[in-house]
Length: 257
Image (cartoon, rainbow, N blue to C red; front, side, top):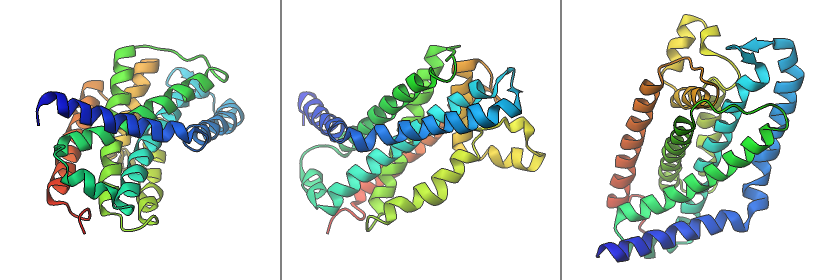
């Protein structure tokens, strides 16, 4: 399969994935934005006014980067896990696997769809945040790269979840029991410096902790950790999850019947 055909195959998968979540935008783009708006009202305005400043910024300004990243992570994951499992459930994924399209093109196509939805929701959430707080931009490059890598990591995570899922209930187990606790313990609403030493160490095993802090640096210029170290962790997770996803595709585990 030459390069031009690979590009056509990739473009086809990406367009299909983007059209999929845009076609049902009321379900894919509106709900997360409404949820984020409620977080701004409750945590930012009502509770934040009693907390005061954090990291040299008002509490509202401090939590804005974390809330945006929360939306990006959730939607990148949800897009891939629902899309790929839907195709697996309908058995249409088998036709894709027996086609001459290379496995890495299939994987990149689905991940690109998750990244596109992550960026779309993140952009809308950023616009909504302007109604509650002035959005700073300390380093645009860092901000964009963090969103990109975070979307890729959790799109790959959603793909792995979809491969192992046997029914629609299985695709909600990881978001409910793993992803949500990781988000809330990742520093969305607080600085890790406020935690006891034990919990501060535990936080270092949470990938979302690095995403939120790197994104907060890109927006506000403050972070609890080294940004270069955070990027190294994100690249490591990307490489590991990509390798696992490729291995599962090659084996066809849970995909071929």
